[in-house]
Structure formats: C-alpha cells, structure tokens
Image (cartoon, rainbow over all chains, first blue to last red; front, side, top):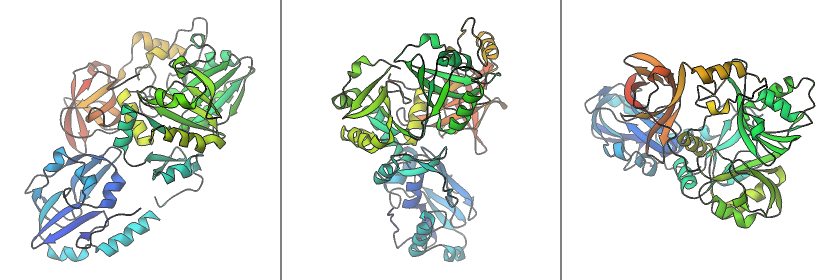
Length: 131
Length: 365
C-alpha cells in the first residue's frame, strides 16, 4: 500500500503528523492512520485553552468500524481546533495533511521536538508494521 | 497484527478480494474482506443499486433421512409445518433455558433433505449440537461448508441485473423461496433471502465456480462489499446478530423474535417451556432501538443509564450511512423500553443523552 509522507512534517509512532512553526505546532493524523481507520464519521475536538501532557489522548476519532485517538505529540496548550471537522469529519480521509488538520498547540517543551520522527523514519516504521 | 496464526482459512475468493484491494481481517477463523475502498460507499451501493458479498465463511450443512422434519421440529423453535419444498425458514436452536445456540436458515429441498446455513463462528458448535441430539432418529448430517462457496447479492437492482445471467424466472422466487438454476452455465442454489434490508438473493455453489460467478456478477455493475457494510446494513435493518442481540445469554423473546417461538401443539422442542412462558408472560429485559440526542457514536457494550441507574447495555451500535446519524440496539430493563424514553450512555467516562426509538431504522424488502 502506498501512502503519502510529506518530508516537511514530523511524525509519531502513533501516526500523528506535526508541522512546527515558531512556538506553535499543527497536528493531524497521517494518511496511513486515516486509511487504517476507514471512513471517519465523528471527531470529538478538545476546547481551546485546554492543556495536555505529551502522550495523552486529546481527540477522539470515530470511523464506521473503529475508535481512534489523536495522542498529543508535544506537551502544550490547545490554541486552535479545526471546526470544519465537526460537520465534515470525512476531511480526515480526503485531505489528512491539509484540510484535515485537527489541532494547533502552543508547545511548552521545545526539547520534545527532538523525539519526533522524520518522514524517513516514520515511513520505515509503517513498512515494518505492514509486514 | 504481529500474531498471525497460520491456520486461518481462506475462501475460494481470497485472491479475488486481494485483487480488488480488500482489507482482510480474521473473522471467525477466516480471512474475510472487511472493506474494499470504503464501507460507506459499499453500504450506499447496496441501498442504491447492488452489492455482492462473499459469505463463504458461513456454514452449510445437509441433513438427510426419513426423520429430518421430526428432528428439526425437536431442535428448532420455529414450526416446520409452515414450510414446504422449495421454501426456507429462519429459526433458532435454543438451550433448555431459552438462550440461543445459533440462529440460522434451513431450506426444504425435499421432506427428507434439508440445506442449512449457519453462522461462521458457530459451525463446529452447531454440528456438535445437532449430532448430539439426533439420538436414534434416521438423520445424517454432512458439513459441506468448505466445499461450497456462498455469495449474497443485495440491492434494488439485483433482480434486473441478474435475470439475463440465469435460466430461471427470478420474479417467480418469492421471499424465502429458492430454486436451482444455472448462472452462465454454472449450477447454483439461489434463495431470495438476505441480511441487508434490501431485496436480493443468496446463492451457493461448488468452490470451483466461485471466481467465475463472482466476475459475472461484477460485470452486472454490482459493487464488491465487505463485512463492514454487511454489519452497518443489517444494523439499519435491525436484524439480530449472534453474539450481540441473541446469544447464549439472551433469548429470542428478549431480542424481539417472539414470532419465531411457535406453540407447536403436541410437539416437545428444546427450550419450549421457558420460551413459551417468556412469550406469554413477558421478559424482564428487551432489545430496543437507540438514537443519540448528543453527538457521538455508540458501540457494543457501552452501558445505558436512566437517572444514574444502569438499565442495560448496547448490543450493537454505530453510524448509519443511510440516516447519517448514530444508531444502535440495546438490551434494557422492560420498564425503560418504551419508545421516547430518554437515557444516558456512558462513553469513555462521559454521559451522552439518547432516546429509545422504533425499529427497524431502515428496511426496503
């Protein structure tokens, strides 16, 4: 199965992508993750200004068949959520890296960025998972 | 994913599914397609025109002998007197306490030869149960599950699409009746039955014809559909699924299948005393339809509350592609089962409001 892995993004082993811009990060789920979940029909978004530790469940994502989570890739505060997903959860399937972004966070520990995966490392991980 | 036992069985259409890009899962010991491209699209294809499902994982037995009807009258809760040759009947086999061994359909080929289609997950249990209760009756049971393949064709366009391929007049096959015919020269058993809430057929044939028949059906414009769509379709139509609405802890009467429990005057059958009692006196709990008032998706086993007290649990739940909202079935205490009753469902430590609604959610048969 071919999936997209944009080079400019960082990734996690739990299938989130992260775009770092100055002190903020935009987070979504990867093409591989949306494909694994199948048709996404509901996204439960957090409130802006909520604070999460890295590794905690910030967003519940329900597909026809399964329940998935967005796991916080970095500790920090939610400064924006993609409200379009409330009425159009299928954007996570059709455009996981652009229109399907999920949350923006103001991260609190810059050092955690070093623990994220590069596109190359994430791609390797997926290939191992598929075999 | 890491632990793949190598004894998982493959249907005759396994390679065909892979060619269509199916995502295969282990279902009841079989590699089965859960979806091809999208469960939503496959669901919609069945509702709007036609879908084809590989259901070869299901069990297919033949029961033969002079005492077959007598035996089935003893082991089934439905009444064989309502059956005739060329007709099938939906029924359950139950334990003495009224809970369910399996739900199934049997077809009367002749009064001494019956075809039986059972749930994939119960094949061994059912075969054993049937064998154990034959006693001295003249009945021989054969398990042809892995020698034959089965396909369900479901949707409003199925009759029109299929007719040019077969040498039988499909309009003459009424609901639950069957025929034997040829599909482009390949011999098939064809019954007007299904599990989607749409018109359609289920066909059975020898494994060697599987790929050819599948491709012929594809050429009529039918979409391949997987187990994911099969489940969302049957949930909209409110057909019971073994292990969910009926099981070895839930009786047919509790599941709203009282109509299956027949008095069969003068005939003793397994579970009769308890089931007839439940049918006349009622049960303490019952299966109801569920909708959510708040936004969210309900899933199997979520707990249902009324004013803080647990009143039941979700037996099946999910998103309805046809109605574009959350639907479910739940087993609740009788006093809370009235349509319109509001309740709360616990979802990951939060409580969402819902209400009991009439069923089925959707049926077009």
